[in-house]
Image 1 (cartoon, rainbow over the protein chains, first blue to last red):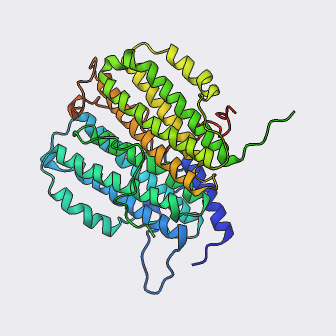
Image 2: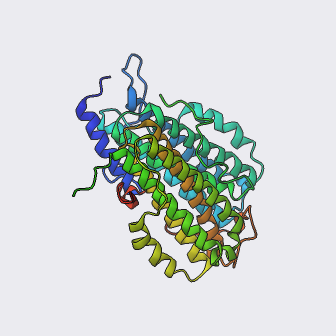
Length: 206
Length: 190
């Protein structure tokens, strides 16, 4: 598809608002009432920053679902209340991140993405299935958070070109690292292992 | 006589360096006070070393872009936030939460400029360092949760999940609040 100048400007404005909101975006309809993205044979696919936004929304959905799976694992019960609150908060953050990317898609004339990224979900599933205890669960989900942070850092450093998408990725990437640190500090993993964030382990968004 | 105009990217790098000088100075103060008493001495030492690395990176960027290395603090940040904040600290928990607030101010200052700067290397540094400031903040928020739950101090790391307070109040938030960042020109001292 062709990304029009108007769409790019709209995405820029929307993304900036999201980045300053600290929460869900007021102009985004609840995902339960929006159209899911369905790939139709021959349908044009988004390109450029909109393609990144589309994949990022799906990835965020997958991570939110991973937290939901952990919260529902009976073999981890009873979860300490503080850890449960932490996971619930992080799950909601990832849903907010998906909303932010979907706002950019909507502004660009693309359908919102409510499905989970199949590739990330397939990668995460074995890890979740192998979880035996709380420390193991924390380790799995912290690793996913680090992957997302590295992915967004790559996007900021060289992939994204529009202001709204750049601002959105830049506002999310540190939060993913914050999640990882708050989890790592509970397991003995170094929560701040280096002075600078790394791009190691990033997945490709476009 | 008008002051020379500082190019935007230079101002951003110089302000970032001045903010790092603030963080290093504040941790230096807190290391010998209530925060160290909360069991965070080793964390503070490591964090100061990392902020020193950030300072070096931002000063290198400032010089590379035609500016000057900043050896002083961001004075408006010191006056409006740090001095009243330090004066209000009455406990280890207060010190931890104040440090977490400063880490977020730094992260917000850098995040707000990621899309604005023209220099791609500076953009990468801003994003990278913002992430690490949020890691620092994350550790501090976890420690604060344990202190809020009644512990007088932490007994090193790792923290036990069962020690966390049962509810989360205030931070963390879903996005870096860029409206909490400092203006990109305020830290330029020379």
